[in-house]
Figure 1 (cartoon, rainbow, N blue to C red):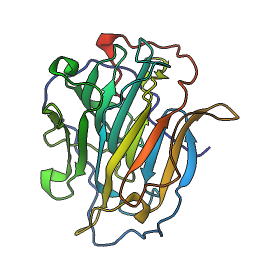
Figure 2 (tube, rainbow, N blue to C red; figure 1 turned 45 degrees about the vertical axis):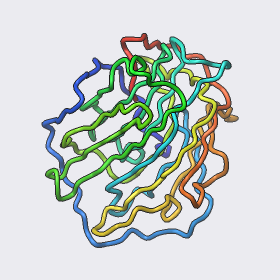
Figure 3 (tube, rainbow, N blue to C red; figure 1 turned 90 degrees about the vertical axis):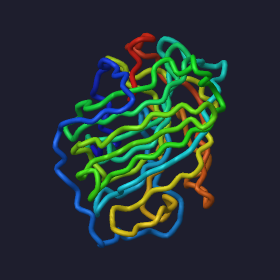
Figure 4 (cartoon, one colour; figure 1 turned 180 degrees about the horizontal axis):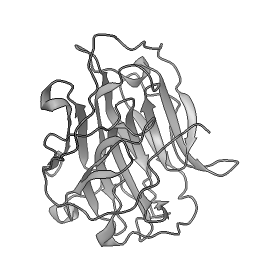
Length: 289
């Protein structure tokens, strides 16, 4: 069976509160070359279903991969149909890896089970083990709420940072930010993502909070070769991910249209919360997935 996502076998771990962190796992290294990935003509993306991701995945799983991904959005204002609660959450993030392999570097926002908003970063190594999981605690106390502008970026540094990763996310509406130091990881770079997700919590996925919609902008990535420009995902093979469950898929979240717009924007929309969860993430055990 073709693997649509590999990150779901994981459990909540203790949250790290430091705002900058580095790890000691040695990076296996991904060489940057001047061999360009073969682009495709801008067109509708390939459509695939996934139980807990909605958005876009860039990359075919071959070639040199990607060295940077960025995106912007306004934090969602949850609706009354399924507000954030003990089992209903949503996270929104950009990342490198995690689709064709286990390793993933991501940063984004989460609305937790208590309705609080957080900035987070997470690094999962090539074995699917959480290497770093970190967030700005109780960010809502700083006035972090719905409708605030977020800018996020993940970099892979084939030459600088000793072949590691860095991440940065900024809430420009209230001047909250979270940035990493140089992260040494053997995480994958074969894909870049712009995703709304229902997190995995202990034994099951959380039901999806009614996030209304996410208005994505600045949806851009750089291929992993010297001199690569920031490009719209339609410059390469990309996949439109629809969050759905069941043999006759019931859509929980999906994008408007099947490809990123030419102005580097797209809208991802909530439709339903999906099946009830058997797991639970209390306020102090948020699953930043």
